[in-house]
Length: 512
Image 1 (cartoon, rainbow, N blue to C red):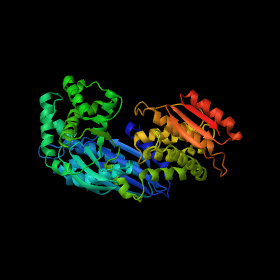
Image 2: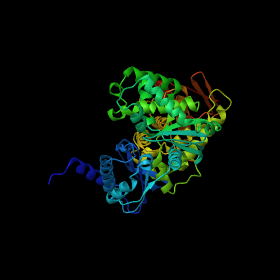
Image 3: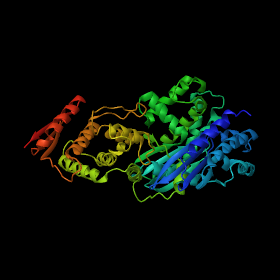
Image 4: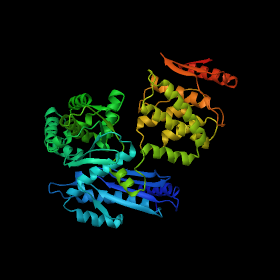
């Protein structure tokens, strides 16, 4: 019998998972039955940190299968069962696992939910938890909090297929959560069903969204949040559109208004020329933009960034034993240190040098911010992880590990800065910035690289000795270093000056 392409794909997924299975490992599985897409994530706990082994998404579009009586069509259920059947095949190779399945807005609304769950048990024999909108918002918050550090009061907005969740919190604690019945699929069906995009249709969608938001706006305005993040596929698409149009992924009021004008000028979703949007997402863009622009207007927002966290990550971390009493980024760094057997004694001596540099630059134009010094701190702890691959060009191996790893807690920009710091801690200085993230190679990043290289150079060999600069100053674009005469360092310092000069950096070393 000939195998179908689907069967071959599923077998390939099983083999990929089975190859990574360790019977002693506790595997965690989160399944999110969303209104637009179904997601599965399989992870394992390693040194207090979660490592994602497998993730998969099916575009089920469940909300589109709800009729006017909120009953799911047979076609929608059949499509969902095909996805769940594939998910179940991915789980067969896991000998020890904790599994949680959550369902959101579309299944909250479905009148024939019992029929859906009965059929689902036949293909994926685990309980399905149909969660409330408020719990969904809480899980979204926890997912984001474990993906990146929420040190400030933060507003998070998630635009799903059938509902929009809003939550405010800091650290791992949420303060208020809400769920509103408006989503990219429901808006597409209500306002943009034929694909036509006009000012009147956009305005009608915005007015509807503002009416929904008015029920909670006063409560939210009473909270003084300092940062705003957006999650979900809808906001991810909008952030990618911003990147394509403006060169970075920041979402702002002016950019949203400009995007609305562009959508109207294109007249129909089929005419959207943006390369960053998959064809199947184009019919949903106008509704997503209408909802988000209304959030900006009603809550007086000016700027937002995208976060990759969400419901499924929140479910995953609820299943885990990961600590929440330390910075998520610190937990991630410590996991990498253990995994790659980094020499922490050497790293601690390099950190001593950097602390001395920090003190000498205090109250000057080159004074390091707490965030800059923290990034340097983590870069020092991880700068030698590439040795586990090969000591030759270990800086490039280490940069590759950082760039291509899931680093819970770190934003994409922080991860890329760390990549550049590790890539340039020794050898030739060169930059390979990912255009999709566009972290600028500015004077501050160059200064951090200079300081990191010097701290490592002055931490001679592996012996516990310390070389303290007499002075360290920064004027214009030149770093000035004064040392007591160190004959054994002359050759290394001369070489370092030449390498930095070749990269457009100025280093001036004097001896007292």
